Image 1 (cartoon, rainbow, N blue to C red):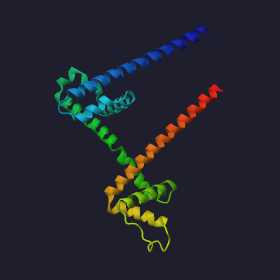
Image 2: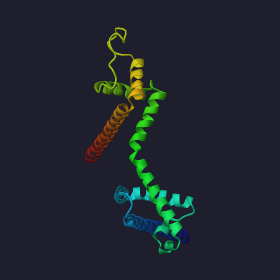
Image 3: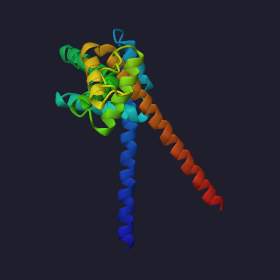
Image 4: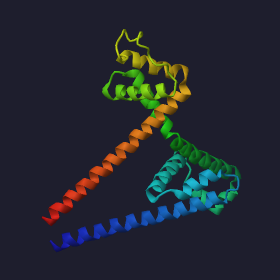
Length: 221
């Protein structure tokens, strides 16, 4: 029994040591990467600021992506920080240009996340406009685009003497706006999605606050 406990303790110590060593190595690579980027006179300052502002978790993701990219080409990211690479100028140039280009593509993708999210929402509206979530968004778009005069309000005659336009008419009006005036329509869609995301975050924060209050009250009682 004592031998088993000793072996388990030893294994645990080894695992903890390996993880600490890996974290130390990753922090070193990150410092080297930031220093290397800072030494590149022709690099986009926006890219430098982004890499320097990354949190530890975000930096880990970036290192994983860059490492995987280099591995796919039979390279090693650490080669960038070794003086020996100077002996192979063509390889050095290729690695430097490729790593910078790949890092820039990651930043560009992140900057376009809002547009990607809006595009996916737009495709969802086209594929299933009568769905509960999709039609709720269409109603918001119909009102917002109408207030901006992007779409023409449906007249009483067009509604067959009803007070409000039908679901079909609202859907058609919004789809037509995206077809004929895509820029203001997509801008409005992105603004609505941002507002919904903010509302969701506020609701989650409110729920967390209420849960913390309830926990505190229960602890007192």
